Amino acid sequence: MKIKAAIVDEKGAKFDIRDDVELAELQPDDLQIHMVATGICHSDEALRKGDAEIGYPIILGHEGSGIVEKVGSEVKNFKPGDHVVLSFYGCGNCINCLKGKPTKCLNYAANNLSGVRPDGSAHFTENGHQVDDMFDQSSFTTTTIVRERNAVKVPESLDLRKLGPLGCGYVTGSGTVFNTLKPEPGSTIAVVGTGAVGLAAMMAGKISGCTTVIAIDRHDSRLKLAKELGATDTINTANEDMVKKIMELTDGKGVDYAVDTTGATAVMEDAIQALAQGGTLAPIAVTANHIDVDIWNDLCPSDRTIVGVNMGDSIPQVDIPRLIKFYQLGMFDFDKTEKFYDFDQINEANADSVSGKTIKPVLIIDKDYKPDKY
Image 1 (cartoon, rainbow, N blue to C red):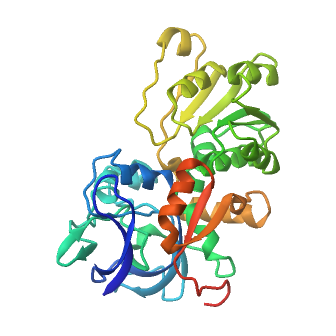
Image 2: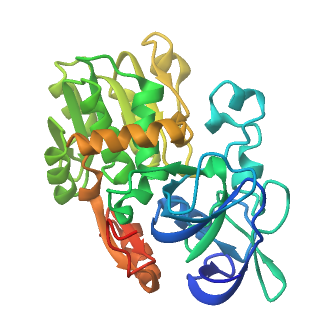
Image 3: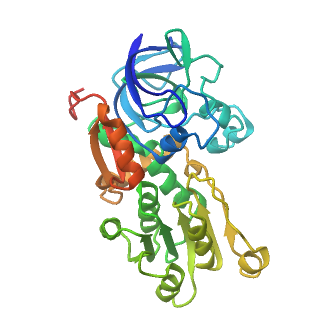
């Protein structure tokens, strides 16, 4: 089956939309998805630039939303017409998946970042040559094929154009708080960087009952939105000292929890210094930067923790419906971070994401889609 897809031909190349890509045949546990929309994530940009070892050419995209067109013979939980959000693939068979921890899947890299399907076959080809995939999904396409465990069924009454980023950015930020940090009601949290991931973490802190929720950024427009979405306090690091201001806001104690989404070395190191006795930092940016930690002075006597988190320690089939329920209750207004672009504006949308002009670009792949139409 021929499809249209945005291809990155080599490291650092721009996205090139072409209509001669061949989609793999449906396998027994596969879903064929008519793509409606997809978010653009900073992870897509990291792979486009070559910050990780991947193959080229490649079709990126991992925040897709769409409608099931066909199902494989062994699929039990989906049918044609179902509306879905796509996320990462966990094998379901390794010891960590069996413990209910798919983000710690022992086959995570092979299944999501190897460029091929879990059985080693090509997901896409062009003129007989393999085109690598991402997350066993590659949502920068008009049609894709995913495994059943990649998909999460969502209510057909909701606008699919808005929902795709729930599959990565929003579930990563919120899951870091809900699933990993698990702040107690009345505790304090600071979120550094108010992009999509940071704002999701911040809203999750508010939902969890944190009574001090500090949003930190260099842009007043983002901090204004953070206040609208639930921040109790904001810090603009362009003209304020982050550590000093956090100490002022917490009566000199520091914050119980901090989430860094910037990946900037100096900022992450400052976030450690802003922690309270027994505080925890989750640095979750996709970055190659390192930090300098003094084990004795930074961690041991103060009993602080630095914790790594992948995809918010989420189970997409559990966490995404939870986020949707919070959204329906008016507690998780993630769509206020989004801006729609046509599919053929992908390079513009990606540039706006990189520059910070747009918090969460969403590519509209099916321009004929209307909520409740299908």
